[in-house]
Length: 188
Image (cartoon, rainbow, N blue to C red; front, side, top):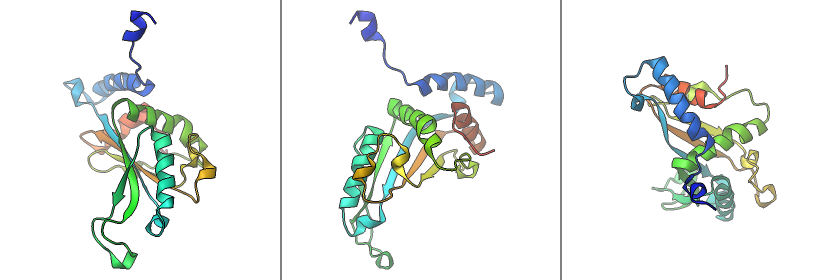
């Protein structure tokens, strides 16, 4: 490998698109500074399995599959307090989560939008009402087998996940416009 090839750093495709989107957003919303434009700060992926209350085998299987999807080891989440109506004890493992930042979040979002979403059944677009006031977007995926990295034979039951795309934006409209320009397919 020559010195030039070593100096070239891998830049995810969506990160390159981000720079072009920032320029378009600056024109559309008349920003005085390019740092006023929205940007993705992190993506949080969380899984909670109802059967994990009785048997942690289900949670271990889900953790392996989430690690394959994200390329990052998830951490276990435990209950903070006991809730007798739901038969939950304090510090009982209930799920797992992963926080993606920098290149990994752009790579995950690119794979989610271009590979996983087209594999969903009867997909008509993502709901625009899932934004909060700060511009963060929440998506619920009922089955993780839409990702090609998942090994369906190693999962005992249907496992769903929650994806939160944390967007640093002034309003939900700016966040939605930004994600739409990056290629996230919203329902018309």
